[in-house]
Image (cartoon, rainbow, N blue to C red; front, side):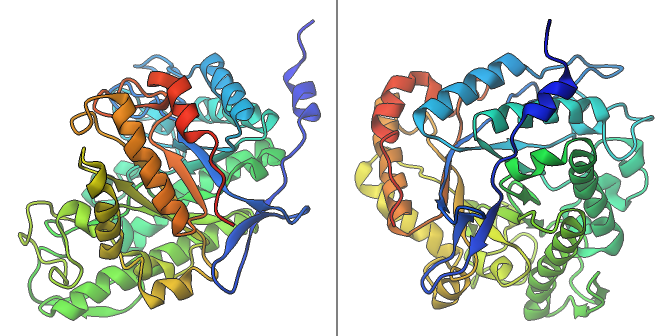
Length: 419
């Protein structure tokens, strides 16, 4: 007779909590009871069906896409190979695969069948001692009436969701509803979460309100008023706005689970043609790409428990990889004295790094450059690295570990983090 779900839950042993230990040179993750250091080593795991579809359940208009057997097979391989973390997307922005949004008219804060699939994923991860690091996608809101018909801008404007009270309230509701569901249904699974990431890659847009206004005053959610005609105040609106936004989210998350870590992901300014000094003020039409990511030093002085920076080299020349790594991280102030102080209490992971197939023409060449990125990050004492991706072959433009797992593991699997 098959083991019942209730019995299976009783047999599941919770993982050790991961906490943060400050240090004289850098903070680190440690296991709370054993006091052993923890280095996040693993992969991004996503399914794509028009959009991120990893945990999709049946809705009135779409079919499920979650594959528990595929997840189980991955966990088995990762555990055997010495990996300990997978990063996943919690998202619901598409009619093609509504995800956590569920049915547009009837779903409220979250779609329970979707969450049941996520719980199944967490159970499997727990059995293999693998941590799960969920990111709340593009930083938007689920595509259902509960959210989209009650927030100005249809729920898509990053600026509204970060800078206004009603936007932040909606984001807090979205994130805490997710966490509260897990706590209510299976609190033993909470330690399996490495933490919660507010957004995959944080940014505001210069071509959206209020930055489209070039004069006048703007009162933000932090109760401060900014003069939109002045570059320094426009920049302060973004920087202080992000810190207030993160403070609200972190405080709300810890009301649900005081030990849950909160993180944010960023791409670097250089990746979108930005120089933080030259392009200060979030003025529109300064560069082709209107996205403005916050720097690590901006968000690192706020309420976040750890930071996540992403790097993709855009060269096939092995001699240029290190130069690109340095220049990209410089653009987010990674090598500054201020960042050195931040890192004494705040771990930093590289939550995405990978290789595009229009640069290296073979998987072998790509992996050689990826090994170089790994070693550069290790030299800088990062607290974790998660490769993009494990097996998302639906995303044809990038190489994935399972394109040639034997070669990938041969090159990458014997890695030990710098101590």
